[in-house]
Figure 1 (cartoon, rainbow, N blue to C red):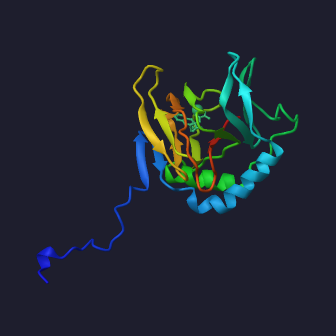
Figure 2 (tube, rainbow, N blue to C red):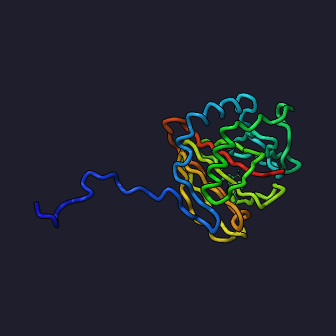
Amino acid sequence: MNPTTLDLFADAEPVQQPRREQIGEQSYVLRGFALPWLERLLPALEAVLAAAPFRQMITPGGFTMSVALSSCGALGWTTDRSGYRYTHHDPQTGQPWPDMPEIFLQLAQAAAQEAGFSEFLPDSCLINRYLPGAKMSLHQDKNECTYAAPIVSVSLGLPAMFLFGGFERGDKSQRVPLLHGDIVVWGGVDRLRYHGVLPIKEGQHSLLGEQRINFTFRTAG
Ligand code: MD3
Ligand code: FE
């Protein structure tokens, strides 16, 4: 055979995306990072949701959020007519939010480490559920007591188009597709960037059906 026509890649795998994409000075997408954890993550999620079911909350402006929420950990993010805040108790049950499962904490810390944040100790995990059509408008996360800690977000189920903006509402946003198993870590100088999620498109995910679930780990207290 003529060595110049030898196809070295004839039976190789297709080229993979880099495992870690940098989307900001201190922001990284870790593609597929959560996939090996799912077998342990999903049963823990079921247990949290049995104690604190998804519910739609009302914004201070009187609108019902399209995203349904739950939380685990010492603090849970809530909103009602009187404002956005973190609480120790689930306003719907009057009970403390469910403990953060050990496997949630381990995953969040492993992801933070991968992005250069080695001391991450989240006390809150907000669980967002998006059905097709649900969205999250451009906003900043400003209810936490410290901005020194990063935020870790885990995407499961249907894909989403994440908007990663600047420091003012009107700044241009970059669009970042987030797929099942992707984790994003934001910290440092990127912590107060505006961000949002475009309306989720109709679809069926093989494991989670017609929904997207996002975990957002934060140090809130
Ligand atoms: C980027 N959730 O719950 S991931 C939220 O996919 C929220 O459910 C989205 O925004 C979701 O507040 C986006 C989380 C996220 C959180 C904080 C950020 C992304 C961020 C702070 C700065 C930049
Ligand atoms: Fe946010």
